[in-house]
Length: 469
Ligand SMILES: [Fe+2]
Image (cartoon, helix red, strand yellow):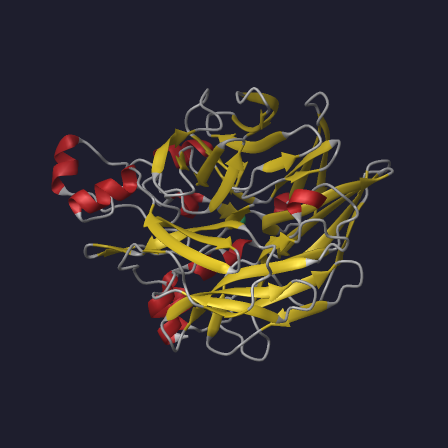
């Protein structure tokens, strides 16, 4: 993937706003709305380079569907980290795995630790009327989805400082409320579960103390419980506050601790159970639901946290090993006797899991999951195929084309659908030969291509996005 690497981890030269991009094939007539993608817009500032896929300066992309046509716009996220980088032509803020180099002037000013980034590049979410670019730091950025212009900052947990958050807030449509967790670093640190209800004011639902804190990228929610998975990938909170190493490089894998599962009662915020199971690591919870005394937790797992260094750009470029892909596990937690077991569903590894979250979050009725994966016949150091998993039968469908590198698979349901997978899956695909990207539209049922729409430039390998219908 030498060429794909250079393009997908390079720099976006231009900000475009195109009224109509050419569509090959036929888009469903019902497909109306905006797909907003988030991800890095450049891995280079001046002569400096970011080191890891989770670094880079944020860029938003909007694909708008209307009457069988698509418009496209992309724009760097206007934020402090971006403005400072432009002004000084060097990296100024700490990212996930890259810290700025300090200048002699910084030394004279007594600056030895740089602020955490506000370049919110990881996900997009709508919290009531606000559309937010999401980062794992405390700094989220509200933007206008029509113009991609920044509006202002947003903080889930403004009452505490020195914290991080997940980029995967959960929405419970039964009470029209959003939830997220923050991790506060302190002598006794805390995982804090926040709710944003119709008052728009965040409220604290629960707080769990922790001596060493785990890197958690997401969490689970079921009708009665919050589920926090405390992987044994841990950091001493005081160390991270005064460290001179990039954020994630302070964490250590301590498998002897096992993975702790905190089950929090949603009604009163009490920590109902702390269960310990064999060590594993995950970025993404998928769904969770309950059946009598059983709590099911679907999650994309790895045996350890070695997947994180596999995203260093040097490692991807060297192509020595295929990228590890996650194992889709369904944990069954018996709340009556505290037993835990898991089943692996499907034969294909996957990542960036998506499903019909809008309709089926917390529901045992849900069946299909979509993600990216690595093709077995052509295993590479980055994702190169799409995967559909049927969690009932364990069967998989895949979409793979040599030289094409698809990103997150977002499901968009047909309005009024009677089957769960009646709709489309859309993915931004990098074309190595053509050196540009296109939006791929698949029939979600059979993974057959319905349409593709090219943009005139390459879109860097991104993370998450959302569809605003
Ligand atoms: Fe994620």
